[in-house]
Image (tube, rainbow, N blue to C red):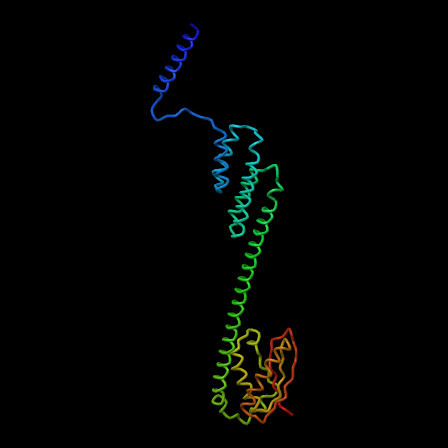
Length: 277
């Protein structure tokens, strides 16, 4: 009697199970929770270098397993894989990728900062090297610009000097015609203690100064005068005396006038012509 009842119950259980399977929607499978299978998939992701996928699987397992110490080796292994990835990126010069890999490794192993110290120091040193190289390049560019500016200034100065020499040569070629008028017999007496102001020396009016010196040279030659050059600074005398002497020599190479210097810083520059004794 008991054996018959057991067989009836078994048949009834099988019938209910078949009915439940037939009532399930087609194409669906009953949900499963297989931590062991997920661990195998995590190991495969780590072995193949798919670190992002491995990190996602590890986080999923940690959410389900809580503080399961058996997952810690996988976490450390993933952190080391990120460190290796960062070192490879550092060797190729990709500092941004290396820094990202370092950040991911630190997030995985915050309790072991010494693990990431080596890569972090190497990245910091590489960053500093980049900054130093940029500073050197910037300094070199500034020096090149300064040298170019100095070269342009020197070229402009040389052009000005060439233009001044050309103008002086042109004036010199015209001097004999201007000095052809003979001096009157009464001019030597008129030249006694004659004062000629040189305001153009203060105003740096070189063309006006040159014209005046041309006339003074003719008068000095005709009247055989001595010349006293009164200036504010000694350097002005050293500039004026050769200019006047050159003009005198062009008119009369045999005549060497007596020239003297007088420094008067507070007075307008001037020439004092006196009869030569």
